[in-house]
Amino acid sequence: QVQLVESGGGLVQAGGSLRLSCAASGRTFSTYFMGWFRQAPGKEREVVATISGVVRATYYADSVKGRFTISRDNAKNTVYLQMNSLKPEDTAVYYCAAQGGSSWSSWGQGTQVTVSS
Image (cartoon, rainbow, N blue to C red):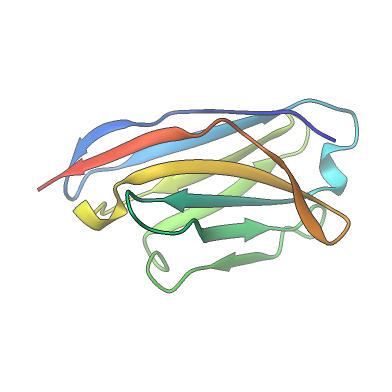
């Protein structure tokens, strides 16, 4: 398993931007399929964006497409989530996750993002 630590959350006004970072341990980071998820109060955890290891193919939830960008720096063992044009409905705890095999096997502790209207 890989250990993950998120950072970069905070309070921002609607229309603003934040960049989340997720630092990973381990020497095989480049082989991991990585993702960002979020969970708002009273709601289920949902996938926000994913990125593959070497090819860096990306996927975005419809709700964030065109506003969020996922990227990774394999040399730094870090995955990023650039969030622009933030909306109050983006308020949630954001989690970084790594997929081992067919399941999301490693999770970070989460970072709070709050968007005020």
